[in-house]
Image 1 (tube, helix red, strand yellow):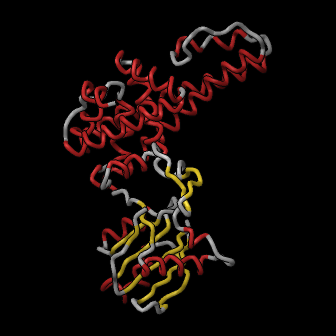
Image 2 (cartoon, rainbow, N blue to C red):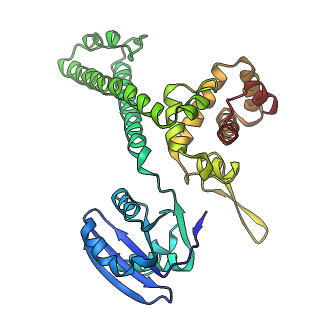
Image 3 (cartoon, rainbow, N blue to C red):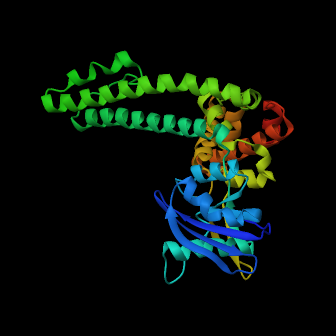
Length: 348
């Protein structure tokens, strides 16, 4: 966990919502200078902070609507920091809670050097990252529809399909297997939705690929030098990592990827582990998938996986290999070198 520890003359805490925000501005002595609710538009905000822009920092808890405020502060040369929502316990605790109280707590955390930092993703690549996440969302929904077709076949005790529903020609005759017209209509709807998702996904992927090559072609090639990291996994890693230099150590990177569990200790006694849900879920998925594909495409890796499975079981073995791949990628990007499979397997 990293905290914002810079000192300023004025500290602005904002409890941000979609249409309104509560603003609290403190001076270096902790005196409340401003404490009021305003509309979420640039003019109102700039007018309110105008007397304090000489040395001001703005802090906001991470929520879905922070983009515009971060970009506004960047354009206006105002220091902006984003608070990690899960770490801001002081904001969510307390006997009473309101927007006014939360704004003051955020300003106090800023002033006291206890404001937990989240990453402010820069706008140059942010929209493409969100587009890629949307593409992956569509792929998951498409897979759910295919699973529903398979489940309906089982529900009516029909013979297994034995075909790949991902191929358009294969799925268009499936509805005819059902005699009930209403069930047939359900399958036809599923197939129509799968076709629609295919059309969207097939348009998105080349567009994202083209943009990624303009953003950072070299890093993309380094990531794809790993056996098993293909087009989509390489893109996910590129946009979710963004800049490897924002991670001081390989342990910080592994933690961010949700690939390690943190020990809980008190009075010299271990109280278990936790924190497995804190980090980037998209990187967790990408590295887990990369581990599976790495084993599939490397005979030597299969031998390593068999040894890990005997000791730890299949699920933990995949997690261990995913962690090792994440560590390798950290040093690859830091040192600007492609993946060395022989070296990786020798050290793993």
